[in-house]
Image 1 (cartoon, one colour):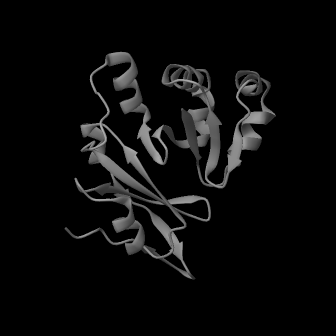
Image 2: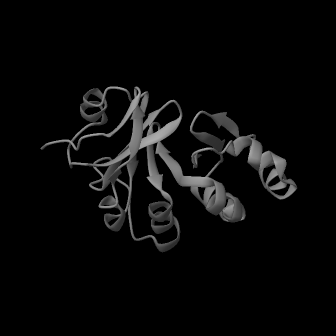
Length: 167
């Protein structure tokens, strides 16, 4: 189980977490890795991941744009879905999870968060948006799936919004 903490723009999350004694103590056994988009932390179980996120709640509210949990290699889920799975036992994750979003990154910044249509693959979307260095699939709750959005990002010297995928 891995946690991906996507930092807010203008924040060096790894430095911020290790500059504070409180967060440094909470992370002392986990050895977080600095990533261009934030921090990547390996934990043993979903329960320990949720516990660590709870301990870091103050920092996450201030410096983190989004907290994602790696369900399987390359596929993440939102904090709400992780809580539904672990605490509420409302959801049972299956390979054909219907509520998904695609996160697009360029130069370590989150530039798009799009709702994925059911049955589509990440490769279909990734090929469509030139300029995205990394795309990850994120499973979410039914309520969260509609919160997909287009984020404004710099494309060359001008700013523009990425187009929505046509079905």
